[in-house]
Length: 343
Ligand code: PEP
Ligand code: MN
Image (cartoon, rainbow, N blue to C red; front, top):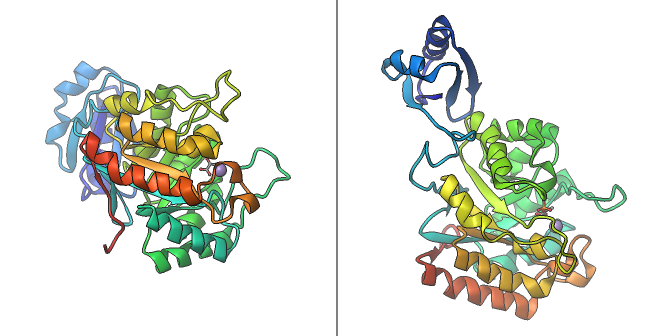
């Protein structure tokens, strides 16, 4: 059982809930988030029902949930959620494109990619300043310099910025620049990082772990939600299978499954799913058709020179095909393309 406190609840209100539960022989775990405080209850649920916690001052809701992920479940919140990133909505009834370079390499490459993203119909700019690389010898990203470049590209284009944070210690720094914090596939079960982004006061994009079940993915989202942050977008980016023809296998069924189990928006990343430019647009179309709330794609003005993931970056006619897909297909599944801010 979970007690959700009002945004205005005082420390005394929270203590009263915890004390009432403990006096009745139960355990109470208080999670203080930026947006709200949540008290998780462990013990006899029937007994908690009799305590009538809903009538205590400062209590917004008392939720009884059968699944292990509680706050992100549709049992807790029946309506599908819309999350706002720097004012740009991601959620049901609309379709949002996120695009940009896999890694920020320099200002010029980033500005060119940002212009290409906007022209293709994107309303959010992605770009990595801290890169989680499989090899310790590979380019690890520009760090804070990369964040500064992204902030300048945001000023120039008006597109809010999505960027990855790989270490819990970097969360305050990245949150100063980013409109949305990305947690990558390799970090999906880095619980300290999940808790840190949960407390950072910024929306979070949580990629599915490359070997994670959908339930494990939702439990990871619950770690973020438990810190009081429910502004989470799930991102399906392919899982590891026996198949070698693609970098990963895009699990299209994960989109409607996750949307049925959780109220959170679900995004598809066809670039990291396939690793191959020629597959990105077909998989992007599949993502729109299966009902994804958003797509995230890698683009690069000169993929042949890219320092990271050039083989999957869109440019030229492939990018034009993507632009056509995002301008024509969403309406066939009852969605409208999200416009960039200020347009
Ligand atoms: C990325 O989006 O740049 C990235 C590294 O993705 P993933 O974590 O899905 O591999
Ligand atoms: Mn990449």
